Length: 220
Image 1 (cartoon, one colour):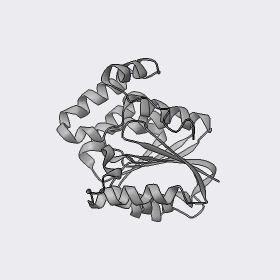
Image 2 (cartoon, rainbow, N blue to C red):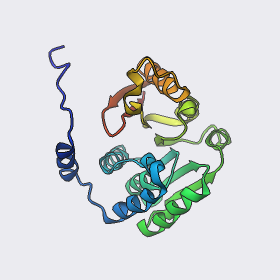
Image 3 (cartoon, rainbow, N blue to C red):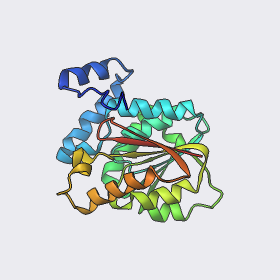
Image 4 (cartoon, helix red, strand yellow):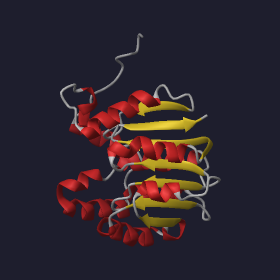
């Protein structure tokens, strides 16, 4: 294809330009990011500003009213999604850490979105499998243990309405997906998911080089 190599590798200065030219400046989210950084290396689990902005835009663009998030951490992504939901919209957040989500709860209140969010502190598969079969989602974000991505996908997909979106984070896994020497469980799980999604006839799929890789699936 003539345009198969039409991409730009971002250096720090160009990345800052990208961020500066999207609506990525939010004082509350910036404060949340700074507080999350105090967790140390694990703070890298938080999504980036432009990713949150992109997710908020997508949520609003499809008119989502019901959403689910697997892996809430300190609440950055959930605030982005919840802000895009209507006043009577609902976001189900699944996580297992009371410590991390305690931060999220405080920021949900400050962001004025706490009334839209239900937090379930339990293994996400247990939470999803106890939902009624007729429970419907418009939007989903999966950003938790990589070895369970496919399981989360199947439980969410069957409850996603036609035209709804399912997003996966970390699908490039810091480049490890194309490193044949990396055969760790998480890397193999992401690699297998990526290979599967492009052949799944139930969805249309695009993998975008946003942050650590973001896949967007639209249910047919």
